[in-house]
Image (tube, rainbow, N blue to C red; front, side, top):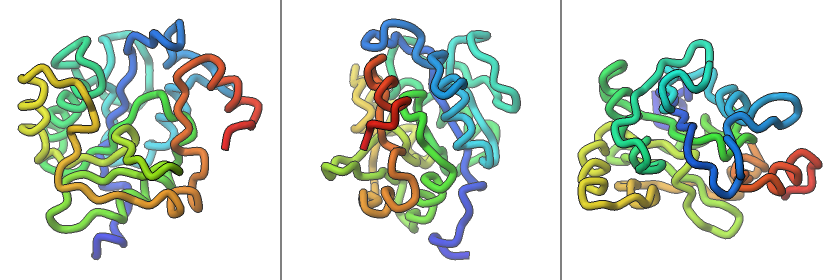
Amino acid sequence: MTATERPAGDLVAALTAGGRSRRFGSDKALARLEGRTLLSHVAASLAGCLLRLLVAPPGRYALPGWLPAPDTRPGEGPLGALEAALLAAERHAGPGWVAFTGVDLPRLTPAYWALLAGARAPGVRSVLALDAAGRAQPLGALYHTALRPHVTALLDTGERRLRLAAHDAVTVPWEAVAQVSPQALFNVNTPADLAALEMGSSQ
């Protein structure tokens, strides 16, 4: 089976939730879009994965079929959550690929993840989509568990920027993303963002 033929079902899903949501003003994961929480929207995009991990404060959310993954560095943001996800993925499933995201991207779809999974190749350790402006998006990306020492080293120096986690990376052009999931990278940071998405006025 070639890299482009591999199904997204061999991915371990990792969904991080429970951050400070300072710009949103309340727990973003529990905000509702079309009658469902953002948490459940994102989780649905990853339902076909081999294993599903929820990196969140213990007992805060209920996602049937998802295993809790302890946050090894609470308060360290998405980069700390990625470290926890890579550790838990390797412990439960062995070396392999992790589909990592947060509740910020409720329009992610299974087709989006399959597109990224198809971009994997020998020697590649991360796969990121490009947005319409050509910027690589570190959330809603694939990371190999082999990156865990790199992520740990970043955190040990006080680094918190998720974009620095990508290493040996390939990117998927926006045009390809737009064909399969045009709203996948719409990021919900504020209630106004959520309202715009609900009204269908986003790009």
